[in-house]
Image (cartoon, rainbow, N blue to C red):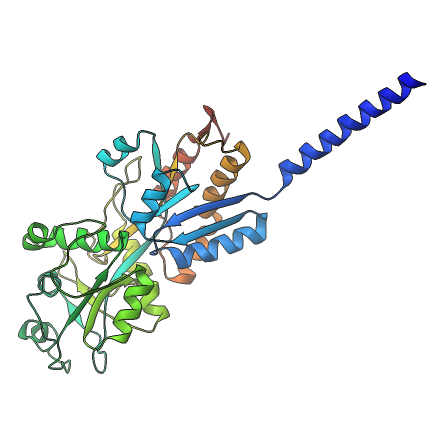
Amino acid sequence: MKLLKKLLAASLAVALIATGCKKSETQPVELMGAGATFPMPLYQKMFDEYYQKTGTKINYQGIGSGGGIKQITAKTVDFGGTDAFLSDEKEKEIGSEIFHIPTSLGAVVVTYNIPGNPQLKFDSALLSDIFLGKIAKWNDPKISALNPDASLPDLNITVVSRADGSGTSFIFTDYLSKVSEEFATKIGRGNSVTWPVGISGKGNPGVSGLVSQTSGAIGYVELIYALQNKMSYGIVKNKSGNFVTPSLESTSASAQVEIPDHTKASITDTDAPDGYPISSFTWILIYKEQNYNERSQAVAKALVDALWWMTHEGQTICSTLDYAPLPVKAVEKVENLLKSVTYDGKKLIKK
């Protein structure tokens, strides 16, 4: 009888352990990310819909691309968001292989606040001169020459730039550095640069707010922020000589380029005749090897599954928020990268 009781107790204990294990495996996973504000409206919508479908909660803090790179480098988040891909030197400095997973494309627009807010045209020389501080008035002859029908005020120009390390700044300065030798020499491209004039705001929301509140202001933000805040933004002349309005179509047209296996591709100053010249991919950064800092395999698998959904089914959300979905060739590159992600050396996706 005693032996029977012991056997029953042992069986019950095994059953409870098994039940407990099963419960822990099915418990929702929570992922943490931080970085670029450029795709933040898109990510908020994607993560909310993904949570409704799967129960996986994804918390994302918009702290700028520079902050996202710092956080993933320090391994304090599961993924970092950035609009500026890492240099080879930075990847070597990190010491562990990093994957760049593109999630969408967006346009950086030149937004401004002047009386009447007419839609203005800009070319590369004009934008370079304004952001170098060489043009200080809205009724400057160079602005009037491109916009002869606009009523331009005798109003000081206030340049608004980003105060934080920013992929949006990288995209904008990458474009200006390609089209203006003077800009490349005096300011250059980077997440954080020293602007010779103006004021600064934190994040795309901060720049949008300052431009909206400052008469005579001009700044650069992701298209969705200009649309959400009902701000005026300019038409920009591209390399082919065409003035192009930023849109889903013109952003997508800019991405018709050869995409390398690592997906790090700059598409500013596009050759496409109908492409908007200040467009870019935005990326999520993850480590190829996911077994670090005592992270569980369940968390690693949840991360890869979420990224697969974002770059496949989740792409239908992009156009609803004025982001361009990934081209087919980019999705193929993403699939190859995600299939290469490992946990303790073993691939997490077996497709």
